Length: 319
Ligand SMILES: Nc1ncnc2c1ncn2[C@@H]1O[C@H](COP(=O)(O)OP(=O)(O)OP(=O)(O)O)[C@@H](O)[C@H]1O
Ligand SMILES: [Mg+2]
Image (tube, rainbow, N blue to C red):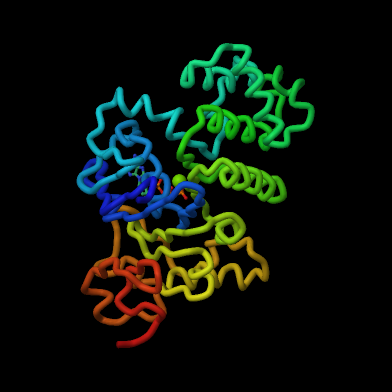
């Protein structure tokens, strides 16, 4: 059984339904990429799993999120709070949403272990220093005593990763953890994170805009479009045989730039906004292969080639 299984997750915020029947699964020791353009529902999927939708005025209207055998939909807040920071951890794009500017970074990492794991201050300190070294932070003993403002963006993000690891979680959700950073630093940090996840047998959900990051770091990938799953499969399969025209377009962006670091801005057409989805398949206005059926009928997610695809005409083939 997978560590995390999300089934037919629907989310509403006020009168809009930004997530529609999201499905995904993630095992221990695995890195799952969640990829899609801005507004495709990546962060809302993460917030749903973390139980943080109420913060943005959203709620789960139907579906299931099973984590380590526990159903998280409807879990009371105190139980959720116990999971967060310990079994479930999240890393966001802006490290300052997780860091306290008034506290030395070492103390902030220590706190995770003392609060969530009940460690003594001395044991927590030794563990924090060890984590800083594993994150390849030079001169960890000095950095431990620094305040966030004394550090570069990349270093701050490593501290946030150390905090996420400090609680010994089973699952880390990283929501575009390196987007704000320089490209070289991005690749380094992603590699360190992925190596640690594999070494420790954790599960990592890595949210990204970048198919290059997917190719570098992920075992499996879920492609989202307009709040729905377009396609999911192993990374090897997705790159070898993309079934959904949107996935092919994403991979095409990489081919155009001649490198793995693709920009999603390369896909022609307008990214739909949440109140304004097309009828039928939400991708049809931008799809080269769209037929009448694609305008009228909503495609269903179905098994294909070891994964799942949500397209009337996968692989662009006419019936
Ligand atoms: N609090 C909110 N109220 C109303 N709509 C929202 C709210 N938060 C998000 N949305 C809408 O839900 C959709 C999905 O948003 P989400 O933040 O999950 O996208 P994303 O894939 O993470 O995008 P990005 O790559 O820009 O981070 C978007 O269309 C967004 O406008
Ligand atoms: Mg987001």
